[in-house]
Figure 1 (cartoon, helix red, strand yellow):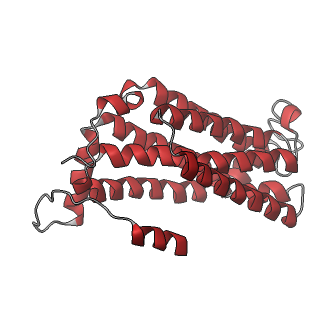
Figure 2 (figure 1 turned 180 degrees about the horizontal axis):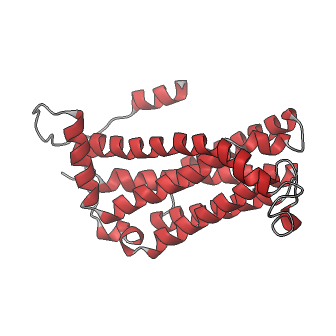
Length: 256
């Protein structure tokens, strides 16, 4: 937090043209932001791709400890979380040193695709090595993808409306995560774990590949979420309005 505050303290932001000081309501600002995004299908689509990814990652992140302790100790789960945290720091440092990739949308969709693949791998085996490496890579990629996304939003949305647009964007993303977390437990206990029990409905099919018993239902949920994340990346890249954001939308931030 100290580093963050110090960074903001020495940063200087250019002035921009205000759109007036008329009194506004939160609802009016929300309607403005919604209309702004609807008029820019690329940004609107990117918003919902990210919302879908947040849903998948939130549902699986909350289950990392139950997944690990189903076959190992709490200390092992703590070690994996610590290693994953180091991965996130390394990813952030890499962004700080090398900056964001030049091809922003391609980097975002490729990063989401790889993240989905890694998520699926984490569910295949009850292995500390596999799960640990998967989460280190997942959190290492995350800052790079997020930095590329933030660059798009900060360059394609004019400063004078960023507060309203980014608030709506954040609200949608924030609403998705608790919904996923709320659903993860009941889905695991009532659907996925029974399916992969020793005598579960998928014991002879999926269970023959990823195993059966405690924790394997969580592993299967990881695989499903990973496939869903890969699908979101494919959809995002297949939609021209999202794929061509960088060339289709003019840079608005910083314009005189």
